[in-house]
Image (cartoon, rainbow, N blue to C red; front, side, top):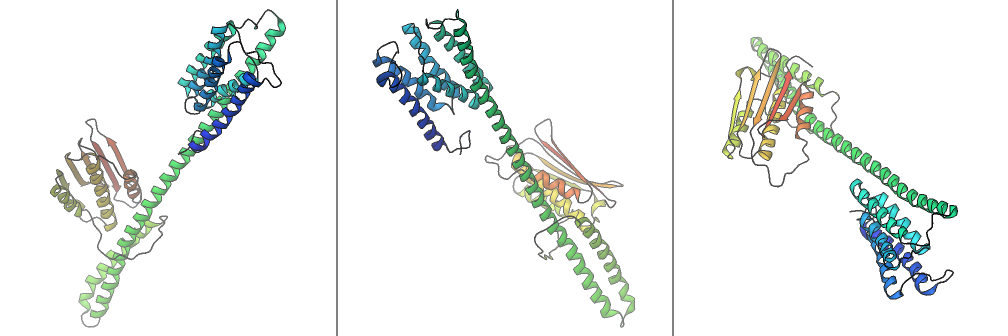
Length: 389
């Protein structure tokens, strides 16, 4: 955790304590020592010193509550002028005043800045009207008053500019961090997709090898039995080549050869039944026309359905869920719909599920549309073209 200047809170407080100590030392010199300056504060030291000391101590909160620090500092001098009908001047007053105004501009948000400025202007006006030494009938006094007013305003404006620049850096940093997180999520999903597609291709190549061995074994003894293995080789080879084309441009960091069969569209029903057994009401309808999809597309549809059902379980526990997979003349569509339910008490994950769905669909030239429904539920539609992308 850091302060608004990027410093640890303990270090920021230590720096402010050192700054206030300097202001207190100037006040002690003014009240008790008078080194280099006359001690001309009107009023008894027993009450003026604690009063002005409170004003300096208010600056300890200049980072966390800058409007309180500025108003607290100026209030002590306005109160002194109100009681004594006299003003004060000197470094012990000027330097803390400049610090208070700079802090007000540098650390106060818009509403607190307005409150602080109004408070400082009102208290300054009260002090100036009670100071008989301030005479605006003399040109020299007028120019001197305007000059110091401009100096105070410059410190206030300088603080505002510093705050604006700091917020700009913070916003750019937050945007860069969000983009980095998004890129990492996309890279992670693509690596996962690459592994899964690699498994499909490897499985099909393995089938090709096994069928080729079978065909070789019966080539001389029974040539009529060669046709079936050759047809299987052709089918598996075409599917493997299609999956390899879709893998182009997808990077992966590992090359594990997992030869286990991959889940497909038919496994969505099994997934729905598993959730039903867990107490989640799920309906599932899969058109018979989609059972002959390529393994890679079937796996992607299964993963999208799995992600949609998982998200519904997380954010709409107990709500009715439905999954429909249908085929048109040019596309295959997966639709997931859930009603409003009870979200997890402590949601987990970085909410990258939709990114994963869209990346999977994009590998086949498809898209995913996901949006909340009017009754508090959620609707997901994944569309994959049947023609090569």
